[in-house]
Amino acid sequence: MEYAIDAAGSDIAVRCRGLTKTYGAGDASVMALRGIDLDVRCGELLMVVGPSGCGKTTLISVIAGILNQDSGQCEVLGRDLKHMDQRERTRFRGLSIGFVFQLFNLLPALNAVENVSVPLLINGIARKNAEARAEEVLAAVNLGSRLDALPGKLSGGQQQRVAIARALVHEPKLIVCDEPTSNLDHLTGRNMMELLRDIAQSPDRALIVVTHDPRIFEFADRIARMDDGRIVEVVGGNDKEGLQ
Amino acid sequence: MDPAVESTELTINIPDSALARVRSVDGVRSATPLALATADARLPNGRFQSFQLIGVDDATLFGLPPLQDGVSPTVLRTPDAVVVDPGGTDGKLETPISAADQWPYRQPHLDVPTRELAAGDQLLVNDHRVVVRGRGKALPRYPPRPLMYTTLSNASRTLLPERHSLTFVLARAAPSVTPRELAKRIQAQTGLKARSSDDFEADTVNWFLINSEDVGDIASMISIAMLVGFGVTGVMLYMFTTDSLKQYAVLKAMGADSRLLLTMIFVQSGLCALLGTGLGLGMCGIVGQISILEFDFPFRMMWFTPVVGGLMVMLVSILAAAISARPVLKLAPGVVFAGR
Ligand SMILES: Nc1ncnc2c1ncn2[C@@H]1O[C@H](COP(=O)(O)OP(=O)(O)OP(=O)(O)O)[C@@H](O)[C@H]1O
Ligand SMILES: [Mg+2]
Image 1: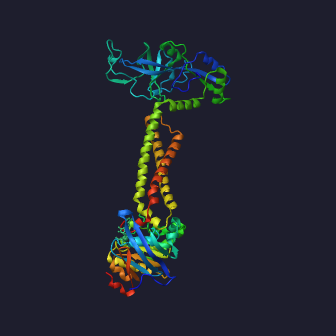
Image 2: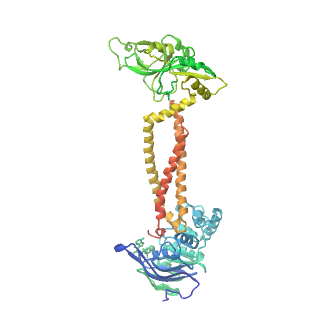
Image 3: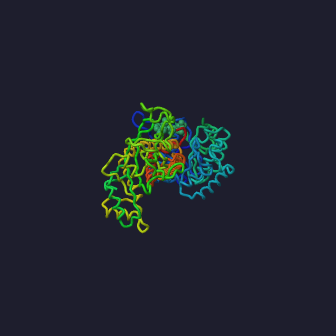
């Protein structure tokens, strides 16, 4: 077992120290994070696993800058999220973070190319250039033949590939995926993880994948196991099979 | 006309000498008298009907509308002749089909089968017999009312004696002067009120807008329609937005700022407004045109109708957009993640 905190400095993409988050107030309050210490290295694929309700989604929401922690420190790509205002944080998300969701969350009225170009358009890139780049990325995820298809006309696996292309298109330094394979069958899920590993993973980019799915553990460089708002262990490399 | 007259609806008579005075004004090419009065006429079956009686100049018959079936206006010069016109009404100018039901001896035959009044039928006006010689093709009146045209001399014989019977003097301008200038001149020289026909038409419209209860009724109808429309469109747009809240959240998570999201909402409602205004005005125009061509109904779209309509639609859509912008702005992007 390794320690969650990595001593090495500069190649750290995400550094969390003593992160806490409580939802609600009074009797109804739920403490979702109870002091998270975690480092995510550049170039690695870190999986976050744990029972339902243990705080996985909350953790990556904080890391991705869409939720404020209550206390503790969270440094993402060298920037302290707590010291950014709303506008800066929005801009930071748009530039530096890619998202893959469980339910794909493609915009149903836009075809594949348009969906993939959305992050570029948000970042102010001209439509023509954005769509050219989107076509490239779609070709890389083997969807070059379905550029004009609406999400409703694509299979689940194809939709998730569009979603991966969308997460990649603006070349973010951090990609967060919340249960990306839970709506896919085993084979499609594996294909999708292979795709993530082959296309998304690169030395200067970190991937965080929240999952319940032990069948895809083999794709992880390290696995952080959470329970009840804490990281209970982080296993790396060869010890993965021991989990669940 | 009398200085106090503001519309064709409420008139007061002027002395006969007014005609000579108007004719003496420089720039008047011709001037003819016109008399307006109301008369209750007895129909052959015993029913009676109120008419607006219009007396036109005996010599020129100026003011008489074209007659149906190509009847010559000169029929009006035969003794006791009148021309009747429905003036926008329906089924009011009727007489019994059977001659036996006309002018019955003992009591009126009120509920017998009838046909439209035609040339040769007789009516009683103030116990004077008048003979229908034709039917007019005048534009429908607002409010609708049957019209009876006759010559001034016939009118003075059938109507009850009044101190003055002349209502309007219709003047025609010489080529050298515009109607409006001439009107000013007549006004200055005679002390009467004078208006060009366009101006008087506008006056009458304004008078109705200000004085007619109908305008207020219609205005309140429209306000209610607008309120309902506002409610419906507002709720619809709100529903659209909340339906796609998740998509807005996805955009927000991916870095779309509030300005972009607001722009999206307002562009959406703006497009709806534009489409709606276009459809509404287009359909209104089509229905109006059909009602003109098919039903002879006097439809007119005035310039302020599309302007005010468009402004109101804009107001409604801006308000609706503002209401539906709220949930989007308050939206926590966290909802994009699994399960919720
Ligand atoms: N918006 C919220 N308001 C109140 N409580 C919340 C909210 N979001 C999450 N929680 C609670 O916080 C705890 C952690 O939730 P979280 O979604 O992070 O868990 P998770 O590990 O992602 O679960 P799952 O595996 O089911 O997705 C849960 O008890 C959950 O009920
Ligand atoms: Mg979750």
